[in-house]
Amino acid sequence: MTETFALSRRGILGGGSALLASAALGRSASATPIVTPAARAFPKNFLWGTATAGHQVEGNNIASDMWLLEHVRPTIFTEPSGDACDSLNRWEEDLDIMQALGLNAYRFSVEWSRIEPEPGAFSSAYLDHYARIIEGCHKRGLAPVVTFNHFSVPAWFAARGHFGANDGAALFGRYCDRVARRLASGMAYAMTLNEPNAAAQLHWVKLPEAFGGAMRAMYAAAAQAMGSPAFANTTFQNSDASDKLIAAHIEGFQAIKAARSDLPVGVGLSLDDDQTQGSTVVRDAKRLSVYAPWFAVTRTHGDYIGVQNYGRRVYDANGQIPPPPGSGASGRENLPEALGNAVRYAHEQTAKPVLVTENGISAADDAVRQRYIPRAIAGLHAAIADGVPVLGYIHWSLLDNFEWFSGYREQFGLVALDRTTFQRTVKPSAHVLEAIARANGLRAEQLGDSV
Ligand code: FCB
Image: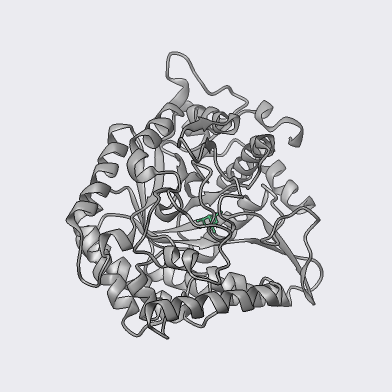
């Protein structure tokens, strides 16, 4: 805690770097300067956005592996996704909300199981659907940051062994080729895979043995339902498919680049702020297995590194020190200052610009999120002031949505959802992000007593 605070205070005190000064100057030319001299200004054209993922918001993603896993018995899903937020039909309303909040970026995913519901059968209608969303983003001044695969895959792909299948990477490449040829021209950033290091990350979390057993039973039931013993999920299961996932990223990267060479393409990593107390041995071993392969492939096949941070873990010689009570099921301490550290580490390891593609907190009490956002962004500002090139901050999530195994119990949204009427209600935390985005900077008073 002391270390992370020291970092952000240095940034606060040393906020006069050339980069930031020029951004502030550019703004002060306007008739009514929005950014006061006390503000921590962000670089010109900085992206401020929110993120969603198809399966979590669209609803009725019935050809996907997740839909199957939600409905088999036994299942570890608390509840099925059902209609989710009905964003398949209500995406224009979602975009309108972001525009009204003064944001300039939207990260969303295109759903593979809608675009290719059977192997090799591609849906022009769904490609058109996503083309309309991209166009809708442009009309509203939102840069489309598009994820090609956000966890859910077609059930047929999972039944063949998921990314672990010998031709998994090639099949993903073929899908990326079709999507990119149709949609890449309108994208601002492309992401091949969302958190392909999630299984590796999970491997380091001491989950109760019963959870592992329940997970295996669910996959066995899905294998039986599909009549395929190969059924797998390399994203969530502890598996050694890391090399195959890397191969899939490379195939995807190349397919997207072939369609549009100037489109920035990258991967979004689950990236904790891994701190140590005493020995660094365990922490370093974790970093080596969970992040290093992805940093390496980003250096050769990546234009930016996507950072997805939800807090920090502290390690000593024996492993992770249990986080303070109330830290949530992920075993992370939801410390907003963790973001800046994760961003610094990702850049140091890849030498690539960083795009924060996810950051946020599950909180039923929105006041928690209202306090969290400025503190996380202050840490990001400090990293920029120290020279880290950061392209944007994309908050997870626009909406309270289907949080995978936890169902609708978690509330990460800036916007609340009525699950019967699908009415969206903007929360005060959305206006906290709005004020920062509109000013392209942070004012001291927004940090309250954390300054
Ligand atoms: C990330 C996922 C995203 C969401 C958030 C809370 O790991 O990429 O879909 O579940 O966590």
